[in-house]
Image (cartoon, rainbow, N blue to C red; front, top):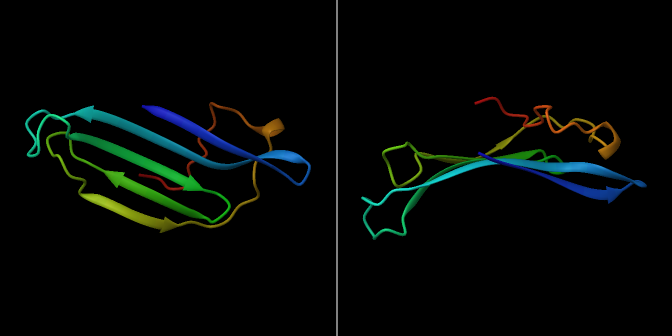
Length: 93
């Protein structure tokens, strides 16, 4: 799984404004040729309080979930208080 964090310098400090979790895999048996792949994606934008969720089953080529979700706004985390081991994603799967 790939984990990414996005920071922006604002209010005289670096603040966490987004995070994403993604996993990808190749599915050679999909229609359209060997370039097809499956993936799961969860990305949150803390500035807009919106998350994008994409889920693909292990044996499928197309996502069965692809939606935008709103979540309650919380104070942004500064880089000083940030920890890579903390779960920041606001939506529980």
